[in-house]
Amino acid sequence: MTEKIYPGLGERVWQQMLPNGLTVAVVPRPGFSRKLAYFVTNMGAIHTHFRLDGEQYQVPAGIAHYLEHKLFDLPNRDVSAELAELGANVNAFTSYDMTAYYFSCTEHFEQSLRLLLEFVSTPYFTQESVEKERGIIDQEIGMNLDAPDSVIFEKLMEGMYRNHRIRVPILGTSESIREITPELLELCHRAFYSPANMILCVVGDVDPEAVAQIALEITGEEKRPVAEKLPPEPEDLTVPIPYQERQMEVAMPTFQLGFKCQSVDKGEAAIRQEIIGDLAAEALFGESSELYLRLYEEGLIDQSFGGGYETVDGCAMVNCGGDSHDPEAVWDAIVAQAKLLAERGIEEPAFLRMKRSAMGRRIRDLDVFDSVCFRICAYHFAGFDYFDFPAVYESVTAEEIQTFLRESVIATHSSLSVIRPIKKEE
Image (tube, rainbow, N blue to C red; front, top):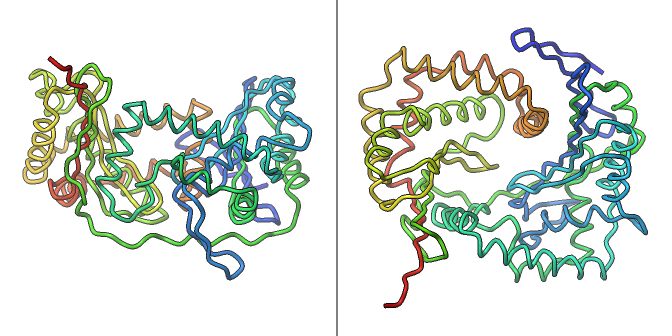
């Protein structure tokens, strides 16, 4: 394995690409009893259209999440129970653009790692178990439809995007999951769970060479094909639905507001754009911003308000939300403040303070094992070494923030999703 040292952060990472294409990254934490391992594939809910072995496929919405559930099955074995007996806490999640399986433990690390790699790498789908899981996931979909936070965000994505598959919920729909079969799950596992499309990241007091050796033993040396993801039809930065609302069981109106931004695909340019977007959101409506304080004093927002910059493979946005008796007034105020900041700029001392504060938060996050694992994996798929972020922060200028606000945070690129309390009959 190769060791890379980051003197400015006091960090070091051992890394190796195995013959099968799997990237293994180990962040040593000497003296810590807790150990954390993430095994992640570059496949998420939006990756439903792909080409593999010369054939083109379109699979049902929700299949990445369905696959996440089913990979915990091994023939005549209870993976979760086995890991629990080893003292490991295991879990998984599916996002729009990746799926992660992970565990933490204080003992029996190597046994737990072997089991994690084994069950994720072993597709085992019977008709009976797939049918049983359908009912469980359908219940999960129903719970999401009753959860205001989920509904408001999913409606915002529908309002912002015409073609991007972020418009479709991660879980899929009750209709789409009925199309999922063992054969389609097998296909998606073959398409995206090739080691060359995955990363194993470990943080803790472990032997990096032993981690790489275990990974090679379990995943094998063969380098298998990876599916080519097929992007959706391109779209401009205007939104199809600027405003929508519905009524649910909420105590007061709540909202999500999004501004559609130009997506930057991979590498340092994408990370730079993310940092610029984060700083622009902080300058515009962060807790210490002029606008936040004014809206709070006027009673238009409360402590539930927050937001930032987000990216998903192929799309990017600034969004914010919270409870408000007048979401439209908040929308208007944010658009007006963005225009003001774009015109007058941000004073250099204030900009430098904000940049130092933002970088300081990222540095503090390096003490959080889960944050380190997640970011290393996500940035790996984005083609960037996460621990190189300080240099990008240092080079970002106030003028870039102005340009971002001028080009991105404007009314024609925005959509507002509102949920209001159910009106009582008089």
